[in-house]
Amino acid sequence: MNPTEPRSGPGALSEQRGFVSTQPTAASNSSQERQQALLQVDHLESGYDETRVLWDVSLEVRRGELVALIGANGAGKSTLLATLSGLLPAWTGYIRFAGHDITHRRAEEIVRLGLSHVPQGRRLFSALTVEENLLLGAYTRRAGSQQAIKQELEEVYTLLPKLRERRRQLAGSLSGGEQQMCAIGRGLMSHPELLLIDELSLGLAPQVVDDLLNALDVIHREKGLSLLLVEQDVQIALERADRAYVLENGHIVLEGTGSELLQNERVRTAYLGT
Image 1 (cartoon, helix red, strand yellow):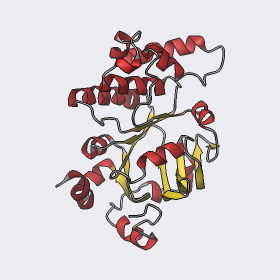
Image 2 (cartoon, helix red, strand yellow):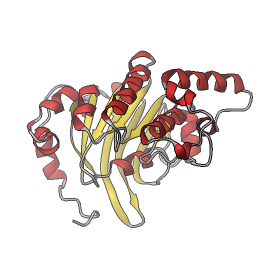
Image 3 (cartoon, helix red, strand yellow):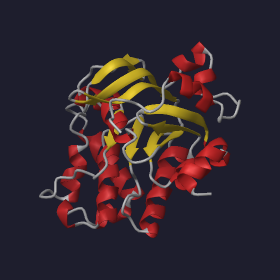
């Protein structure tokens, strides 16, 4: 199917919304509650060259929330995260983060405001050490904050102790799980309010995934960091999510709490095989 021709139109969307519980969601909050959202996205469109991938996407992440974004391969999940973090331009629509309009901000400005992105594929500098990669995550921190950066580095090592053991090792020599730890650690080094994580568990052994999920539980539940998680393992994502969105063909078709979507017949059939 041509990505520029979404299979579902607005009429189909209203029918698809019927699959969601009538409990309050992002779409049904009062305007005052929406203003309190850490991240607010309204009617966003984006894509590559002349090919539209995202159309009329609206969602929000509130402070302290873990929000999951699920969907099939090619649905536009990575494109959405790249647009939110300034790596791709927004065509139309509106992105507001921490009270700032970031719709057309540069990526480094967005990081400085407190939104950090852990991309799919990790994208580490393989010829640099683990610690050098981590310190690159702090490049937007202002001069004179060396003590704060040192403290942040120590917190990352405490959260992900394997990185301390590997800190002098070249990133290119790490296992896939260790590289993912390094990518998450690098994202945390910018001291974000919101961390976007694209495909946490992709290609990793179950024990490594458990270790990473435990680390996320610490930074989310104990430290209050907000998370927007794209995850291929829908069961894992929805079990941990406060709220979640389903993206199909570049458009949000379902939203609700994690537990609501776990019980949703359409989600169970399409993504859980039950």
